[in-house]
Length: 278
Image 1 (cartoon, rainbow, N blue to C red):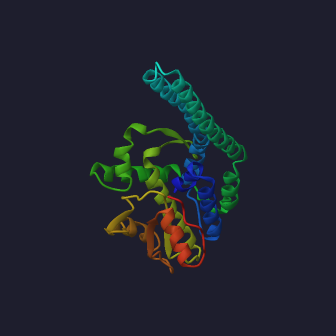
Image 2 (image 1 turned 90 degrees about the vertical axis):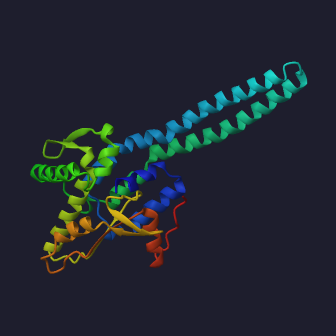
Image 3 (image 1 turned 45 degrees about the vertical axis):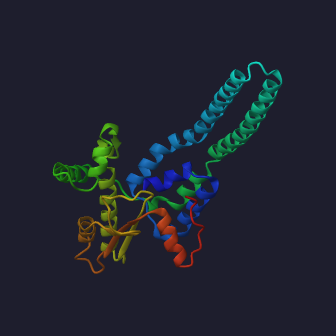
């Protein structure tokens, strides 16, 4: 899912490295939907800007806060000159120490942004053979028609996101020169995965299981059975498997797991990737 790749830009260097290592370990068994790649590149620059802008904002806030601390104490110690001097020294030391830490973090973030090693590594893993094809205009329009019918009944893939993000809808030019609405992002991703599985199994591949990795627990994708136990939504399971039901090797399972869950699963199979810092 797009959020797996974008989360690298929000994470500490250690957590970012763990995520990239996981992607490299499973490179031969992973694949990126075209829609995910498009969303990743569309939002990547914003994430890069945020990495430094948040620290700059904190540096500015630190000065405001220390000025306020000084003002409060000066008001209370108005007639105590000795205490006033001590407070000034204390507040200055606090500001100098905090500012030095933030400046160091800012320099590290700027160096990280300029290098942007993660983009190089992601592009190395997901070359042209590992990225899907976009939907055609006809495929997209047919999908939108079907999804709109489901949404009108207040159900279907992406309906909850549609309601939640209605104010944030935007359109963009999609390959094939037609307008694409971001509200249909999840349905498009699922359709691309379904098409890819059908294409590969039609060409004698033997894909029996598909694991969709996301940092979000998508309630449209899974249903909770009990504590820490999930199962795929039946309508989605049926839809995904129907693409290959008449093939020699039909798809049997489509499940969605979080990145943390996926790493735990890999470690059970002796892959040995450090777990993410939550």
